Image 1 (cartoon, helix red, strand yellow):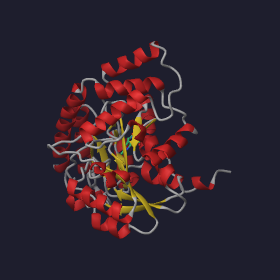
Image 2 (cartoon, rainbow, N blue to C red):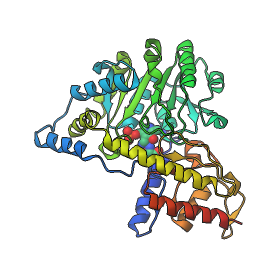
Image 3 (cartoon, rainbow, N blue to C red):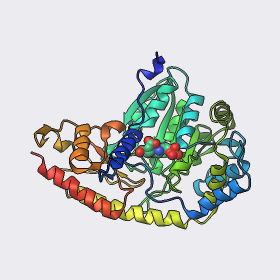
Length: 396
Ligand code: PMP
Ligand code: GLU
């Protein structure tokens, strides 16, 4: 018999859909996957070369639990230079992806029954990680009319004596919102006043458009920094999803707890990956810049196409590589006699009939919406938008 905690626990919908699409592709189906939450670019060569050199030089053993000092120094330098936050290398813990850093942070902070506020729409893993720690996710809708910025009044109203933390993500998956600096300052003031932590997931930090600037909440003041766990990773900025490398930066007592968890779970992150991570941060950033230019071009294209589809609306995403259009005007209509009741139906029928994979909004607590990842070639995006438009026009 399985543990009690598994009763109310879901596996990752995004990972599940990815697996399903891979299976269909293996059967020879020509699916265009706009479901993917990873860059379609390959890891830059200079990073791969650093890994090969590390391996050939015999850097193949366990490392320090928190990560090699060289990498933690490089991360500390990056956080000071780019994010205006001064963390000592001893206040940084490297993990096998930002997902594991979030898991470690939540396990370190949340006791049974503690509440953790999660603004929605949100990434699929936050609520489930909170539940694994026996905490209670408290969902608070973001301000859709304001580009899905945080709704500070609603967050204030949700704070109770049991509130231990809030998990924020900016730029956001799945909305593409970039929270305004003033909003983040207001959240920071609330966190200090009510004494809760901010777990700030900044994994999409590098992917912002229209001159939008990412702002790190921990940079507000030392007091705010003491209430924040800054999370970041290499998956999105350096197209390193398969390498599994992320980190948490926080006050030393939080990092000490995270390191204990790490020491009893993964021991240490892959040694070769860590060397590659140093090179990613310190090497030339031109591949990253090229990738952002290309994402910016695709974002405009997808947005324009969506806005021209009958009765489809979409809040303009400012960052990451997602759009979250509202397709609820299609509900109640039917395709070949089958009624579309919700976004799950919309995505399922679109996949089987038009071979286009999206993620239904339900996965992100965004019913009525679907997530489109424009991390795909322009050619595929053109085909996919044509087919999606055709599908919507064929609904009766
Ligand atoms: N946070 C968000 C919002 C994400 O979309 C992802 C992507 N998987 C992650 C964290 C985790 O990234 P990784 O574990 O690959 O570093
Ligand atoms: N973050 C990505 C997504 O939202 C990758 C899959 C996952 O880890 O959930 O699709």
